[in-house]
Amino acid sequence: MPICPKCNYEYVEGITKCPDCGAALVSEEFYVRPEDWEEEDWEVVFTSSVEYEVEMLRDNLEGAGIPAAVLSQRDRNFPAPGDFSIVKLLVHKDDVQNALNFIEQIKNQPPDQEEEQ
Ligand SMILES: [Zn+2]
Picture 1 (cartoon, helix red, strand yellow):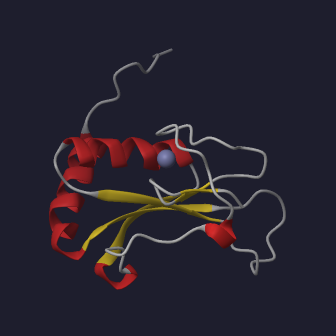
Picture 2 (cartoon, helix red, strand yellow):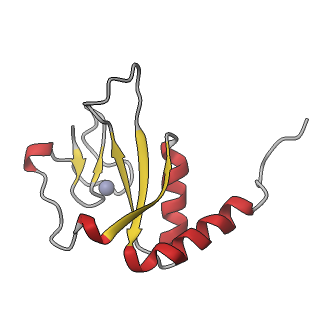
C-alpha cells in the first residue's frame, strides 16, 4: 500500500504520486511516521466511508487553523465483502472540541449547489 510521507495517507496500489500534495508515494515498508505523530495524542472526530467528505472537512479545519489528518484504513482483518473502508478524520486532543464545533457548523450549512426538483 503506497503512502504519502507528507500527508501520512494511504493510497491504493498503482498510484505513485500523492494527488493531494504531489509528493512521491513510498511503500509501507519505507514509510516512517513523523516524529511528532503520536497516535495517542490524536482523536477521531469524524468517520465516513466517503473519502472526499472527510478530505473536505480536513481542508476546512486546516483552513480554520486546526491541524487535522485523514486516515484511510482498509482493515484487512475485517471480512467484509467489496471495497469496504472507513476513512477517519483525526485532530489533536486539544483541538477536539473546536473541531467538533466546526464540523457541526459545516454540517448545518445549507448545501451550496443542491439541485431541487
Ligand atoms: Zn501528500
